[in-house]
Amino acid sequence: MSLISQNVGSKNRVKRANVDADEPAFLEVNNDDEGGRESDLAVSKKKKKRKERDELLEKQLEIEEGKEMKKLENFLFGSLYSPVESGKDEEEKSSLSFFVDRSVGGVEPDYEEDVELTKESDIEEERKAVWLDEEEEKTRVNIAKVNRLRKLRKDEDESLISGSQYVARLRAQHAKMNPGTDWARPDSQSRKDGLSADELSDEENGIVLARGYKNDDAFDDILRTNEDLVVKSRTKLLPGLLEYSRLVDANAEDPSNGPINSVQFHRNGQLLLAAGLDRRLRFFQIDGKRNTKIQSIFIDDCPIRKASFLPDGSKVIIAGRRKFFYSFDLVKAKVDKIGPLVGREEKSLEVFEVSPDSSTIAFVGNEGYILLVSSKTKELIGTLKMNGTVRSLAFADDGQQLLSHGGDGQVYHWDLRTRACIHKAVDEGCIHGTALCTSPTRNLFAAGSDSGIVNVYNRDEFLGGKKKPIKAIENLTTKVDLLKFNNDGQILAICSHMKKNSLKLIHVPSFTVFSNWPPMNSALHYPRCLDFSPGGGFMAVGNAAGKVLLYKLHHYDHA
Image (cartoon, rainbow, N blue to C red):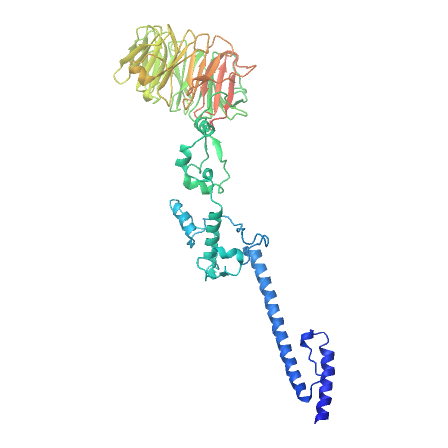
């Protein structure tokens, strides 16, 4: 038995030496001095070691698989389990590099500081999150295992927390370590109280927030639009320089052979009429590029002194130095001759105004008379009488009142419902009034005289007895022949026929002249008439050379 045991033992030793030559030293068993009984014990130990080695290999494989899984999860979903470490020296004092994102809904903060911050933002309406991770609630994070995460614990014994709690605590910790600055907080009231001089000047100059950023609730929408963050106000025109550019002449396809006495835009902003002493009434489609001619009408016995659309856009009233006038129906393309007016001996009806409601046409008559004609029947419906001669007219209050100015230097206010003069007062510094105009949006009117002075009044104050004008404009040196407010009342054009380039544009809110108008080396020639398009985008100027100059005003988007 012993011999057999010894032989078996020797064979086992030889076999183990061959098989386990590469194994670690602590797995080797020294049996030189052991007997036969110890050889069985060595075999069992060997089996046990092999089993332990297999288990160790399995654990190593599991660890490698876990690392690969975490690496893949980090690649897909970000660093959730093992945040990036910045070094052993900074392990204890560095904070995580996360940003505060309060757009995620449904996450209740578990950190006290986060609760305080959420209380401050309760006023703002919360938006629903674009995407929610359903796995956050299932995920468990051990915050006691990593040194950098131990600061997130609320209790000493706390270790595992859910993914949503982990995210909330990280946000709260970041907000605690990186408090927001005062200037970045959307607190409108506190900012208003501490506005700097530069910010105040921006507000005065019309620099405003773009659409979508005008209240605190919309500040978090700042990245949801491609609009400009700061834009110039489209309602407030700034003084100083006027942004404009010259376009192709409005009547480039058919220039006039005589002076242009009337230009006017149709209410649609695309149709322009031009009329002059060559007895032709021309219509152009205005686009700023070609300005196509649409139609031309020849009036045989009337050199045109003035032509005007009715405000409703249905007809054109044409008048000259004649005792009759014409009406052109745009729909029927028919010209009607009206006059002479019954009971009147006027030899000229060249000066007239049409009421904003298109119901009445007021003509300047002889010896201070104002002739009121119905636009529907074309018959005389009434007359008004001034003390002096009538030179100019202007409607106000949607056609319920009429202003007149003339040879006695006084401005009359007439109530057309009672046909009575409700007020008259002297235009300061005026001997003979020559031009009159009312603002379409503001309670202002401008009066011009033969001395070149233009006085601007507040109509309510003027009717209340205040005779002092708001502003006396002295930029013209010859007789004022034309006054015209633009569509929103921010620009006032003043013009004289007697001098070249004698056309000024006034910034009404500041009552200052635009310094870059008229342009250098201007081709205005002798300006005769002017009109602004209904949207304010175009300005047309007719001159004595038979041209209608067209300009684009860049402040206004629409024609």
